[in-house]
Image (tube, rainbow, N blue to C red):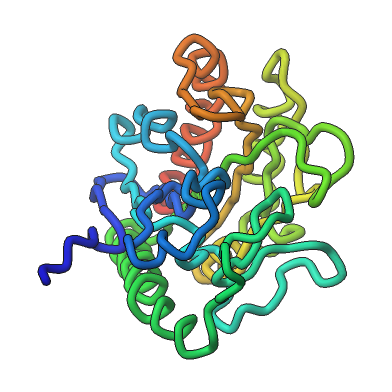
Length: 272
């Protein structure tokens, strides 16, 4: 039987010292795995929907864009390879999740993946994605002397499992200041806070996942920032999860200002 699975990622190489990573944008689930899922899980509701469309302007800025193809239900690319919790003491989903954000089972018959299956998925999808992420950051840094990594995410604005009430709209994370230059972080926060109609925070509930924490090494010339956006800022948060162009058009200029600031920082740093 021919393997029709897509590759683990799609890379759009750019010319600027900026890489936009979209690790939760994928929706593909292998048919044999989907057959084990509940009807709800087959809809992959916890996807970071429409990231490529939302950030389409980044290509025109010269950014490289790395997009996951597989659903986070197959393997979560923003978790450590050993599955360690990013937020000890808080509710989280794992490297190969067994429950949805609504805390319902993903596997209809309870046949959750064992260690061998988790390792196989990690090797097939997680490892290639991160190898490409590392290679692209290294290429950018070699060419420009500095690289900025923007990890793009979105999430439903109300998820009692993970936070109380409604989440702020623009959640910037820099691993509590460890993953990027503090002046850049403050400039990005200032831009986000000036966005009328949106609430912005820095290192609040979402401080950055594995990608931000692992690759952000300011002393080595790699500055990583995660943005976790509320999905109501650009799309429907319930089925059919449609993109809402008029809603998205209101937030995109603010995203573009933040990426422009990140790019300006990288350009300035490369000349220092």
